[in-house]
Image 1 (cartoon, rainbow over the protein chains, first blue to last red):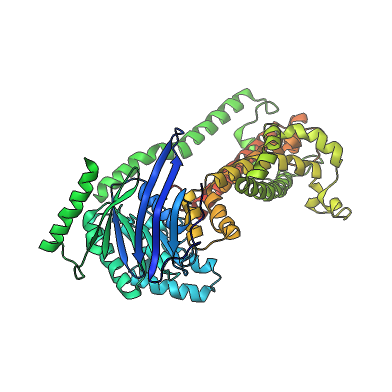
Image 2: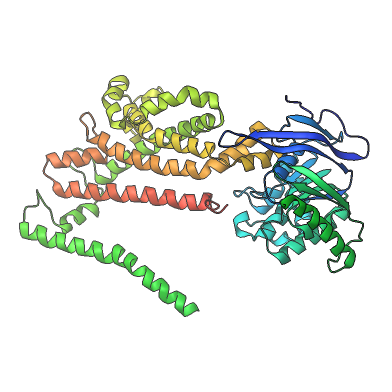
Length: 262
Length: 284
């Protein structure tokens, strides 16, 4: 049975996303049915920064695709706040291919505005503001292949923020960059979030990253995808990872994850 | 560090220098010596005789025009035929690549016509279009310009030569667009029409240009062959054939040199434009 629930039933006031008993199955290349998600329940409050951690696989990406409205579910309910719509207020930063290689950095950042009919002057002005916020002002005429991995992800974030999204979905966006770049990007994203108060659902397979940024961490199990546990991170920002409270949480998350591994 | 790089570069470049200068020079010298020794210019003229023709491109050959005027006629035909093929090939390729319906309907037909040698169309095209020229099609009479030499039959055959490589490459380019870019465009609010112009078209551009390159090369092949057939009375292929009948082998070889050089130049131009227009290719 296929129930079209995305944007159908609205989430409760104050909630951005509510998932109830979401089940997703797909056919693998060999023709067998695989459960990608089983009984997934969770909520994301408006303005909340939720990180989701789990081993690398496709279940988490599927989940984000479902929330974005790019994929449908077999059963269960996906409820979104009334103002969340794909292509308008939901932004999505993919893991790979986050920029159009045939467009300059500036033209990538203005893409969404152009699709919405914003004039050239206005969209370039907005894009230049965003590029200066993510530290890429000097690279507006560069092409994606001329940028480092970290710079590309900065540009991708500017590209999605141009539409002033209310919900930002991020699929391991910092997975392919080195550690120091990753820390810069984490700090930048946290700052941007504190300024804009966008709701963020951020998927990662790095426990440190999940704990450093999230208000709440969801621990996810793959194949079939399921939420194993969730942790409130009540630590002040900017967070320090060399800290007893942080380390205790780190161990708890790790233990929850390794239950999955046994 | 810098020095090592320079040495490597020199070491790598020697075959190129040799291939561009020494080998062709050697060939010309051998040619000159052998032809001089044979002394039968109606079979094998010397390099100097051929060079003499090449540096006098305006010299009239009997009543058939000069090397230059005939070359221009061939080039004009190719430009017109290729442009028509490019417009039709890209449009149809884009539509067939995006729509399964159109692809399903048209692919059997294109797959049947594609392997057919374009020259095989020539007798049919000449019968259908007679020797009607482009100005006549537009309702004009004899315009006394080079356009009078652009016969519809020739254009049709060139179209057949250029169309299929452009169509198949465009089709492959559109069908091979990464789904990620389509998702990205959708997330950023693009509708179907916008995705077509802002994702499918630019993403397929490297393949479209590859199609252009193959297409224009094939058009240049086709026009020479078509002009050598009976019924043709202008073009560099025609002059080559006519000069051969007159045993003017120096003109024949001069025409061959021109045909080869223009073919290489067309290819080089397409390669350069690819490097300019799709700098991102292969660097995703």
